[in-house]
Image 1 (spheres, rainbow, N blue to C red):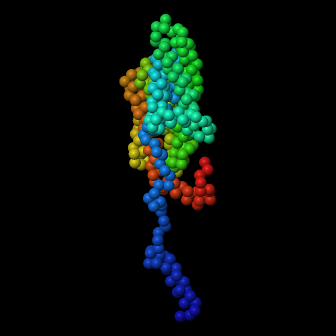
Image 2: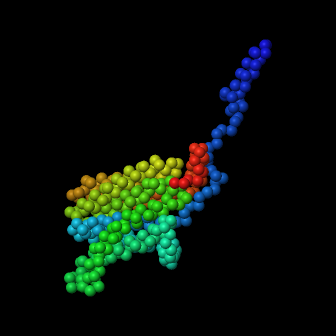
Image 3: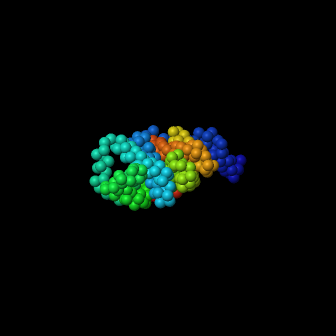
Length: 340
């Protein structure tokens, strides 16, 4: 064998080792992330389900404040009463769930000792404190209107006169109240909540409109329910469209919206919201169908909040949703720490 032939033979043996040879097969396969030693990197939020209910009732309170003011200004007393009652009940329920989660009322009051504009929690607390009294006075006005004329004097008469401007202020402050809880969640290190920071406020606002419109469909007379129907259907469309966009932009953490308990809530939310919106459109002349569609929309809104809440907790428990996106940013030459 010549020197050239021996060189070609040795080269063939080297190439053979890299193409299906036993040596190649015995190599460790490319690593795929499965666990960070089974430990959490991000601490899950220490919140009970009170906070999920708080997200829902706050949305109903805000949406109903807008709907109630619109109904009063356009001469729909039946819808105005239902919306204002929903606003007051939603507001009181929000305060109850928040205080119940905090443990004692003094902690809620302590949150108002400072104003920190860079803290969504601080800003949200003050927004709620600003919105609440005006929404409450507007709701009291609905009660005073049904009292005998002779009772609508003195302090009660003054409260009745102030109820309309108070309702306008409550409606003006309602959108930030509906959206701030989403900002609050997005400002945490919880992967699924943080990755949804662009769209989540719009999802919550749409969900709030769908729920409060659904409440109007349940309680208002059929001939006055037109604005509630439009509010409900519009809110449902916004929620569904933006939620779909949110899932596309979240990246890996969007998995948590489709699996486990969160996945079940999100599937229920879509089914109920679509059915409720369709029923609201088709039930313009049917009292029974309007009530059913309104209940479905409210249940869909609650399911959305529970689904987002559970998805965030699930993403914090699994280190994959923290480590893998960081590795992807490193591979792309971006900063390890997410700056968005």
